[in-house]
Amino acid sequence: MNTSNVSSFTKAKIIDIVSEYTTEDLKQVSHSDSLDSIGIDSLSLVEIIFDLEEAFDINIPSENELEQQGFNLSSLDDVVTLVESLVQQNIQNKVDNNE
Amino acid sequence: MSKRIVVTGMGAISAAGNNVSHFSEYLFDNNNKLINTIAPISLFTPEPHHASMAAEVKNYDPAKNFSKAELKHFDRFTQFALLATDEAITQSKLAFNDRPLAQRTCVVHGTSIGGQETIEQSYSLLFESDKKRAHPFTVPKLLPSSATSHISMKYGIKGPAFTTSSACSSSGHALIMSVLMLRSNMVDVAITGGAEACITSGNFHAWDGLRVLSHDTCRPFSANRSGLIIGEGAATLVLETLDHALARGADIYGEIVGVGMSSDAHNMIQPLAEGAEMAMNAALQDADILPSDIAYINAHGSGTKQNDKTETYAIHQVFKAHAPQLKVSSTKAIHGHVLGAGAALESIASILAIEKQQCPPTKNFKENDDECNLDYVPNQAQPHGIEYAMSNSFAFGGLNTCIIFKKYIPKI
Image (tube, each protein chain N blue to C red):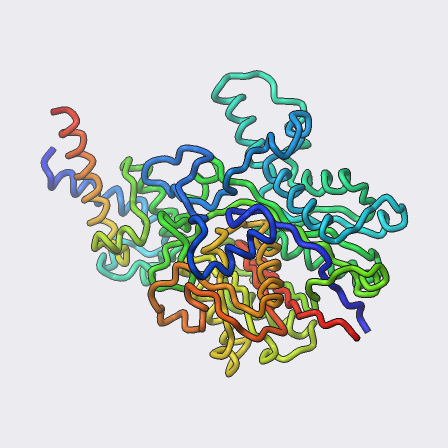
């Protein structure tokens, strides 16, 4: 599986998860729009983070830690970027541990 | 005219000391001489990536305070409740061997969760260690009302006794119910407060999921605040009608002149300013004073992004032009968020503020936040003339309490 396949699989799964929390059709909206504007409030985001952690076996850092690392979770694109980065880190860690 | 209600005893145990005198030293410790109350959790091993800091009661050995037989019945939260109550009742010099007084005294003690340690230990034995039986005292030990029952049994107090549970306002509701029973002439004395001991693995997994726990420390109202720090402990106050206290020559530490309660009717997690405003306005109205009479507010100030800006907004709405003159501090950076014991512990902090004519500081305050623009008494206690102090508690689920304390001035 190359990186772009990983990426498209990840993105599709993220969108599936986020779709559960909004009535907006995520195929019809810009993924750079704020989460608020696509119907995701801060409480839903807490649940989405939990679902993403479970689905991808990742740990999403706290809001303050994310800020320090230069991430924020304002839009769907932000969520995808963060999850992809954490998934890649996981893969890299597993490779390192096997070497 | 409604009966006047006074405080004639106080007891506290928390990360900030094992009695009220130590608590006072922590609150007004301007030289940072005392050890840090917020520290890595020692009661269990947190998961990697999870919050790992808490405000635990320090150097606490249950066996030094209770017998082996008692500990079979006392969850950690009950132990703290009994220790704080013992200090408060000792200070009040009350004894309940006189039957009319025993029947005219109530016990109202709050807790958010109750016997969490007992629940988790029992589940661990049943589900992890494959034990087939739970200890026969598991149920009476874990009940949220267990502490109330043990207080009434220990002192032979036979009037109304019950537990209030409304998350972080539990002991606020306990104090207010006590005040209302005293005013209505149902009782002459109330033993009231709250206790909490839920620094446990299962509970922290649950709190961590909510993403409101700080991973380092509690910085209320500071722009770089990162969430709340859970604490543990208990606080108990002895309340009496003024007539009853004067008749027996009791020492009086303060007066409760106003109580307010409200419900946001909005959301289980997110606070609503309107709910906080209603509780503060109700307390001011009950006290029959003007907003400008309040000199100091011991804020709920949990250190979460949402609470602190909502509470600030609500204070502006209630106090309007007087808001900039108010001293507002959150002592949670000192003792942590003691959940169901918080309102009672912070009530004691408010009474001590009046007694010392000093505002305890908001410790760990580093950066101004545009949405938090009050005088938060940053980092250092400040001398201040305080006749009236207000204590706020705003709980998950939008359950709010507000209590106004007044300096007690004896008639000469």
